[in-house]
Each structure stands twice: as structure tokens, then as C-alpha cells.
Length: 299
Image (cartoon, rainbow, N blue to C red; front, side, top):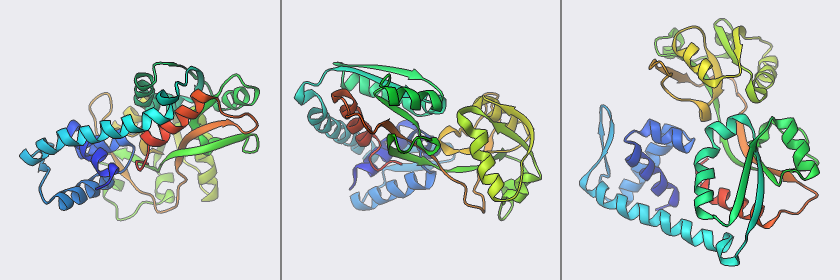
């Protein structure tokens, strides 16, 4: 039994859907399914019953859920003490975050860190990537959680990846490409395309489109992920974005589907960054260890 299997089981049990659990964990649905199946095989019992609406706990699953929560609480408590509380580390942590990371990744980790380490004053500010790099270099920020795949100053800044989120094609549920045997960038180039611009998404897309010798047929560009989601779900166009920001339903209740692409598309990598020339403060070291534990085996 692994800690990862336990975490995945809890997420599926609490959300009632494998797809929702996968989104909260920022992993694929198949990874959640395989982990739970392995856990059931090791325990010799069925923990979840599959239904048309999702999953529900079996009697054995209900019993194991309480124990699983105790396991997670015990591990987090064991890790928390040597990382901070046992040494009485206090102080201020000035943390930068880019837009996408702040909105789709950091919320739950921010809340858990504040609960676990109330003696550390965590000040998080949202900034664009160039401003974060400048503030890290001059000491206005202690650390940042950002898209390290976009990092420019790789000599002056240290980076530590936390998770990699693959990019896939978003399309309406009834789109012809949803059932095509294979989808390539040339197929996508023939479709109207909704381009996300925030966090240098347009620049990143431009690089892999250029490598393929193609250009998307952009009908609308926006900095709003929710606008992209709604437009795609409504059938206005398609887009290529990361699993981290994917949700299967638009705000209007219309469904979006995902398709893998034949060409290798670079992942969107979330990680920590800090100045290479400046030693980490105590609070920053605690946060680094905390995030390592929080994402252990999950990305």
C-alpha cells in the first residue's frame, strides 16, 4: 500500500467521481482508477461501487475511509513537526504566484499551509512572470510558485518542479474530432481556435505551433480561462490547454471533451523558484518541504 493510493482513494470517495478526484489532484482519471484498483487488490475487498453517476462507498470502503483519513493525518503530522513546529520556526514568507497558479493550483495548499503553520506569516501576491523573477532576484520575494516551464532567468534562479500538467485539445462534446481515431495539429489548424493569452500562453502555443510549421486559425483571444471554456463548450472553436485548468463543464452547464494530440506538446510545469545566490529563509525552507510532501507522488 502506498500513500499515493490512499490519497487517491480519499479524493474519489469524497467527490463521488473519479473525474472530479483527478481534477482536484491534477492527474489523469486513469491514474486514479489504477491506484484504487491496486488498493482494492491488496486489501482483497471492493472499496467503491461504480454507478452511472460516479462512485459510492461500499460497506468496506466506508470502514477503510476513516482509517485512510487517519493515515493521511498521521503522515502530515509526522512531516509537519520536523519541518517547522518542532524547531519553532517563525517569521514571514513573501511568496509570489502567477495568475494560473494562484487560481488553479495554490488555493488548497495555501489554506493547508496556513492551518499547519500559523506561526509563519504567509504573504502571497499575484504577479506576472517577469515581475516575479525581478522580485526574487532583488529580494522583495523569498520564493515563488509559478510556471517554471516559462522561467527565463535559469542562471540566477533555482527551480524545483512540483507537477507537470499535460496539454490536450479541448473541444465541444459533439465535435467530429471527439470521435476521430487520431487528432493532429494539422486537424486542429483547420478549426476555429480560441487562444488564451494569460501567463504567456500565446507565446508557449506559438512555439509548438511553429515547430509543426502550422498556425492556429484564431477567432478570439482572451486572458480569461472561463471565457475560453464557455466558448469551446458552446461550439465556437477549439483550444489546446493544460489539464490543470480543465473542467468538464462550462459556467453555462455545457460539456467539454478532451483529446490527446498525435504530436508531442510540451507540458505546463508548476514549481517553486527562488534566488540561487540567496540562502532560503527558515519559513521558505518549511514551505518547500511542505509542498514536497503535499505533492508527493501526485504529479
